[in-house]
Length: 274
Image (cartoon, rainbow, N blue to C red; front, side, top):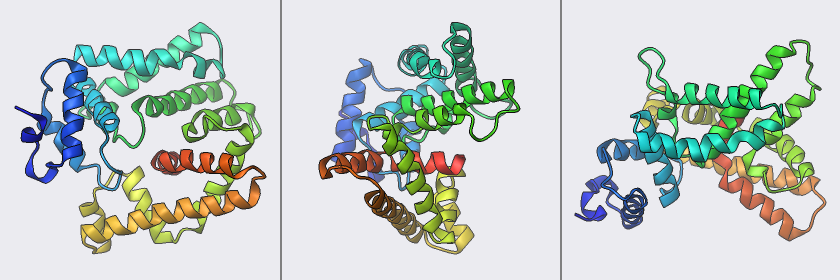
């Protein structure tokens, strides 16, 4: 049976069929519990098209939540064992790095009470390894702050955290990261209160379009359009503010904007979560 014929009617789309085929090939075996994967895709409203990479990461998270042995090995190799260089910027000791990696494993893969493992909440808004990196750095900085309760806002730990939890700026100069943080914060403040609330409900609270529509007495399609407009306004305002501040050539600026646009969902989630 082909991937196309396995798709439910509401998700029957050629690019998704190709992504499922690629996913099947990468695992070298029939996919498990596709219905749950399709349900996850339906909950990804407003997060962009489903690429092969997004689908692969969502499936990996799903199988990790189900304690699949092969998935856990893949997750550890890609998302946990690659954290050393990042964590070493906060503390290079092997004891610290190993402790944080184990904390992240526990936080993401172990259920708490009746709640499922936190990895179940991964929504595919960015690569899964970038998502784990953000969580790891937040865990690491929390540990370091607990060791230094007197540290103030000028503490260099905060600068390290900001740079490491901004994957959308990982390939550009440090000066750009600082200006982006300022521009993005100001752009968020320029949004209308309703726009900020819609983004907060969607990205931070994880509400569906139907649930948000119930709050504002709006149809789900209207909610989707308003969230999309808020995202585009946020990106456009960030671009305008950066253009006024950065002294760089056009090609480098456009490269910066491409990075920001490709990770806008991660940026919104990180900003609201902070």
